[in-house]
Image (cartoon, rainbow, N blue to C red; front, side):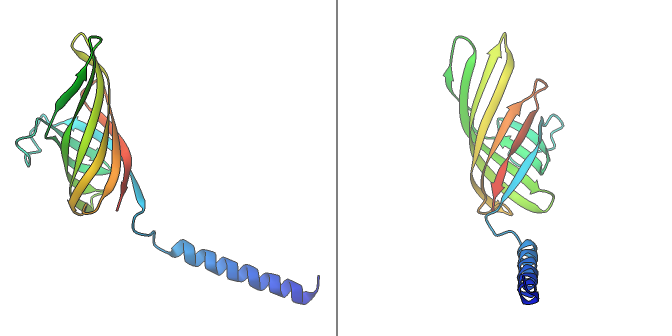
Length: 160
């Protein structure tokens, strides 16, 4: 290969490196997904008081911080073996990573099993239906898995 050929290759590689650097420095476009995970703990201390009509209240820690309110609880199906399906509406009031704050609402489906009066397994699916404040326009789904101590772990993705 000639010296001129090497110069063209070197120029092309330099240009490619500059373009790659510029793209890497470009902010992520709106609509990107943010992964979230953390823990819900029953609010036994009464810290969460914004939604006094809720049927259950949890404090939220992790990527989301604040309060989780269950506003509606409806049993949809119950079997003699203890399998139960429930659904309803919920409200989250708080912040994402301490900076984006507001509310979002979900409609959930909860599937769990009770044996001798004790929940032995529980999981739920929480599509977000709307948001306000820092959560205006949010979309996403959270999954939760119940723990034996009454807490639940959550994980999911939020899109803005």
